[in-house]
Image (tube, helix red, strand yellow):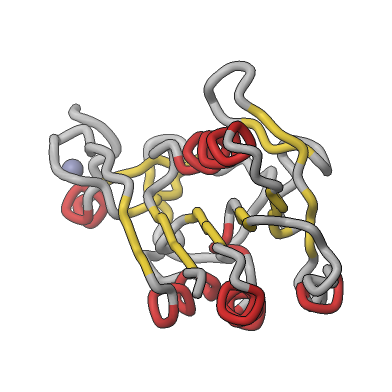
Amino acid sequence: MAKLYFTYGTMGSSKTAQALMTRFGLIERGQKVLFLKPEIDTRDGQNIIKSRIPGLEAPVEMFSNADDLLEKYNFDLLDIDCVIVDEVNFATKEHVEQLKYIAEEFDVPVFTFGLRANFKTELFEGSKRLFEIADTISEIKSPCHCGKKTIVNARYKGRKIIYDGESIVIGGNDQYKSLCYKCWREGKLDKK
Ligand SMILES: [Zn+2]
């Protein structure tokens, strides 16, 4: 039986690059990959995922909050060997349960990549469900400016960390930086 995998990390920890490299490695071995992403994030345009590494990009299929993945894709007929989902934190609880079903019932491994928590340090819906039901969970570690491991995706404006507000502000002026919990709590955006 195939597994549901969840790889998480903070922003800038190369999650998307790893999703793209996973896809590349599988295709190189002759596998057919269904590459998916929730529709909420359209930074890169509708149908392409780009990493920060120049040239590392791939076409992607988007699904919306209302989509049922089992209805949208007929896995009985679909000739694929595995599924990869980037930005899976923006998926719903139901999507994650559908991905689990795909792994179990169609014997198709599902590799998901995303953030653990939002800027308030609260779990995203998709990530929460993945922590609950993924078969294999791994963390991509990246260091804070102080040297500790980052676990928080801090949102900030100017020099000030924002601790409250709407969870998802795509294309807003606010910026994000990965920090350890202590630096986040103390408002230390960088070494100064
Ligand atoms: Zn720190």
